[in-house]
Image (cartoon, rainbow over all chains, first blue to last red; front, side, top):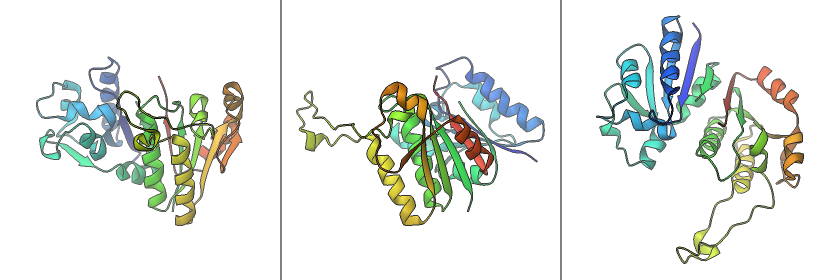
Length: 108
Length: 134
């Protein structure tokens, strides 16, 4: 099974093509990939409870692991307890572990 | 121990991508991995030795009080950290990109290469991440 790590660095409201990146994660998982979706920088904004980000919400609760960079959360005063269910605050070390383990990485 | 290659394109002082890239490199070194960094386009100025700190007149802070960080010092710190951890950190600039920008004077430890080197780094790595610019 191929492993993938998709890193979303932009706010979900910054660009229309972010929806395509969410969709790519979903398609890779449906094709049999083991997918981690890592939110970093302004990418964590959609992870706040109550944030309207339908594309991200569709990934939550499924087979895709959704992580949020704990440093990016702290920078934006988003407490770990105030992120959506299904999003796990995580150190950037998780990305390193995936890269070291041979995951294919995409940055957006 | 794995080998990871990270490509950076953003110039200094411009994007949150740069500190994220530095954090990734730090984490990889801390975990005992070898790291190749290939800087392309504006990112080749990250290691430019001519970077200078400045005071902040708006806030009335002196140069020392402001202590504005420069990316060249972060690169030096990462190279030193790799030495401490006894792992290999290659920090390679695209030579043509360096020449275009006149940033030949780089901090010690930064090398000069070409996209061919980037391809070789990628071929020899367990994981590759390109942090592109817009």
